[in-house]
Length: 302
Length: 228
Image (cartoon, rainbow over all chains, first blue to last red):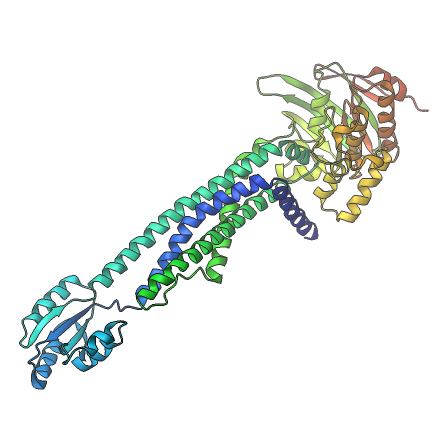
């Protein structure tokens, strides 16, 4: 057990020395892996931010029913009753025109506009939440509510949110595919690096086998090399994404300020970054394992 | 009478293509013996050593080394067998991108010896072959004789039970060849079994060991030294 641990320590030290001996080659390999991983990682970071942004908006299927200005209290109650009786309705919320005006006044830039008005131009309204995301149901209820007396206008206002949600799903799928393809590229890069390493070390491997080295002893430094290279590539990808987000945020501050928002892109958190490092290290190891399995047995001492 | 440390029983070795390097070979080597294998080029000397080191497998017969049947040994067990063997090659097989010291350290690193103990043993082996003052030098800066001494230091550093040397004095002048043989002999004197493949008649005349003469893969004769 102690000898096994000692072998691991020796392998790790040799790997570090080998990487340091060829700084340019190491840098190039790490750069290739870093760029390959940065693409899906950056996409993931942007999607995660958009998801957070979309999460602040209700994605429940909703229909807004605006009442005629002439509608009195009894007519409002009658409409509410009809809305509650409709099949597929989960909740009905009454939004009086005063509340709507107060809410509108809080919207940046609107307070000055509203101050110039003599009367409240907004109608009383109902917001109806549907039980399910069903375009057919929403369409049917939209028509049904529009035909009610004292209803001036009906609008299915969560449609664009659903579209955004669908786009986010599509983006996530695209990122997954891109990640899988570029992850495969990482395995390929490591496979090739280790193959070249085996060829370079051919004499050393042959001599080591002759004087009693086990396959594990020979393979271990190569596995370390693959894993460390993947790990460094993952670190480079995180650095690229982090720096890109910093640069984006500098411009985003100005754009968000125009909408009275403090929205900024958030970099990957600690656990996400850790997961990236572990995964990239694993892919590096996988590339090394595949290469070693394929090429090491071709070397037989003679 | 002690059991043989190397035993060949009706061993044949045929290479793909049909060339028979060894044919129906039987002999025993006792622990502590020094045996020369001689014969013309292609007689089967190197193949015989390769069968002992499990670098080749016998096509027929049984090869016993230290009581283990090498012919039927699992691949995974071979490294552990080789740790009990010291190998000296005609082409040396040194690592030219490592220092003299690192070359001798390699077998000790493989066995997992702590660095301090390994370094002490490596320096002792280098001292024995007279290369301690060159430990930091790359092997390429050594003369042919020094490189062969380095090869011997690497072979003996693990204190193997058996030393196999394939033409260890080839391409060396007489003075260097004698020095190399003295080193190998001194190792034999402390109990190691030594098998040397050579066709250097002068060495055999000087050292008068037991000689197995091979001819076209067959045992053509044996000379047993007279007791002193």
